[in-house]
Each structure stands twice: as C-alpha cells, then as structure tokens.
Image 1 (cartoon, rainbow, N blue to C red):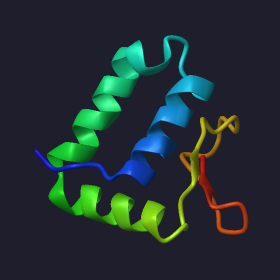
Image 2: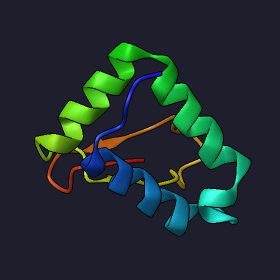
Image 3: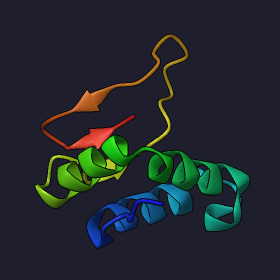
Image 4: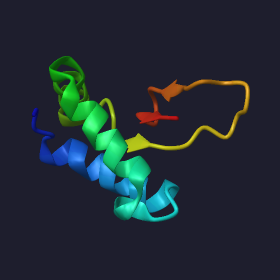
Length: 78
C-alpha cells in the first residue's frame, strides 16, 4: 500500500469534513483513500501536487454536466 503524505491527507480530510455526510467515517472517504493508495502512480502524483501547492482542496462539483474541473488559481479540484 502506498503512503499519503501529510499535505495530501489534510486535503482529503478537509474534503471529507466539508463534502461527505459522515465525514471520515463514510464509506465514500474510505473508498477514496483505498483508490488512491491502490495506485502507486496516483499516490505519487497527488502527493506531489499537494506538496507543491498545486492541489489544496477537493470539492464535489455542483454542475450536473461536468465530470470534474480544476481551478489553477484557487488550486482546487471539483
């Protein structure tokens, strides 16, 4: 299993607290952690993005027509 660095862990914990009904106790949070740590490349890239300040927030995208979006100025991923 790949390790999530402290900066990425903070991003993930804040996402859980702000976007998931049961926070870090939710199945969605545990599934997200499992998906990230199952992939060495994904873990490495997300760790690097958080460490370098390219990623500091995850949020649920409210646009029903969009799969995801990234705002480089605010460094958040929806």
